[in-house]
Length: 210
Ligand SMILES: N[C@@H](CCC(=O)N[C@@H](CS)C(=O)NCC(=O)O)C(=O)O
Image 1 (cartoon, rainbow, N blue to C red):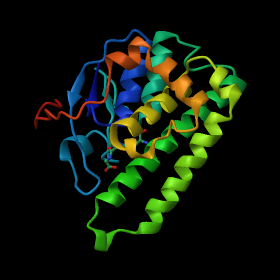
Image 2 (tube, rainbow, N blue to C red):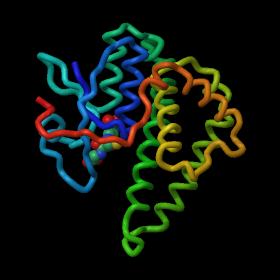
Image 3 (cartoon, rainbow, N blue to C red):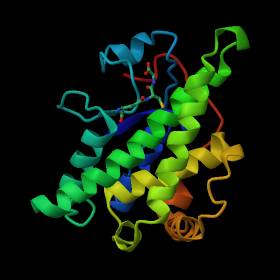
Image 4 (tube, helix red, strand yellow):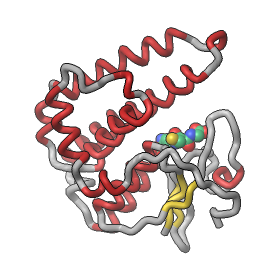
């Protein structure tokens, strides 16, 4: 079993962290993708052209990151990370949606801000910032979320906040949000989070997939 992806991707890091929590050794084969280009190696495995992709002998390639997390938790029998009972499962998925939404918003904003000024849509950048702050405030004030045990959902949120530190530290999301900052510090101290940090290196090589 191996994972295709980049150490710069929040979706990939989430899967690696969940694998570590499950005690699953999941080697990473470095592959980068870009919104503005097609990556044939990845497209051959995932027609969406996105990473991460999980390769398992005798099985079809698996994507996206949430589906891969389901597979890993199921394999490891981790009902705490991926609850089976409908109520807790929906709550976990709700938390996951916040984390995944933060990741999507981060990438949207990064892509928009990277465009030459004359091609930027400033409203996307300012509306994204408003949405970021609304999400931070909702998390800051959500005592129930902060008291929740570790799950795929809470790990997703922690990885998403870590991505902001990695790429958009200027947002200063901790400012006036001591509860959320404290929660994040606690989750970030987990070995799974420490052992799989974001990294800006890229050693992707064609042909490593197969
Ligand atoms: N919903 C997908 C999102 C994955 C995703 O957007 N990955 C980015 C890298 S961070 C990607 O592959 N972008 C290339 C593209 O969208 O063409 C998941 O959870 O796996």
